[in-house]
Image 1 (cartoon, rainbow, N blue to C red):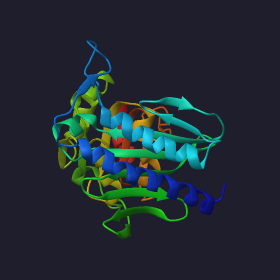
Image 2: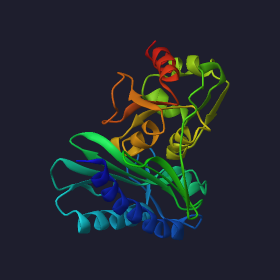
Image 3: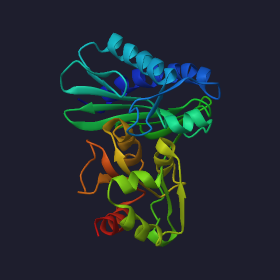
Length: 264
């Protein structure tokens, strides 16, 4: 598949995700009904906004590309074949139900097992972070667009590092090594979900480390960061198609130092 074909496909995804933004905003900062998908095991919230946003994006993809596979956090997998779309309707549901605008809708395009394009849309700020091989990594905002680029000169001792929550690193078994890493950076902060990963591509955050991610949490973000100049891998140094513990860094040297520390 050539870059122009990927870009044409992604434009369908961008339109679907942006259209679904109005659905999410209708629920944002309202008195939401919230369900816990894991019952008494842990707190994994889901709302009607999650299911409606995914349904809208899924329907748009199916209508245009009925022979493509679609994988969604809420609706599961439909279809088969070498081309897949991966949907996280509201990445950061905890932020969403808290009224914090650090959530987003994620959509990734995977061809022959490789993530080739992606979208992260934050409708409250009207920001769409998107990437494909033809146009690179871009920010679409209020009718304008500009290229994205990571901070190529970032080093570990002057890096800004974000992670969503320490429990994710504890469950992944890397919290002690993470603390060793955090002691070496200039600034460490919690929170952000997909928004923090997108800001690596923008160049305002240099390093994001999260544990216990699912594929739909990270696969759509990989092209956005990589085509902006960054590096995204799991602890084995591989493309994190299965999620897990993920390191997203502004450049290869920074990534290598973070990976070495987290491996111990």
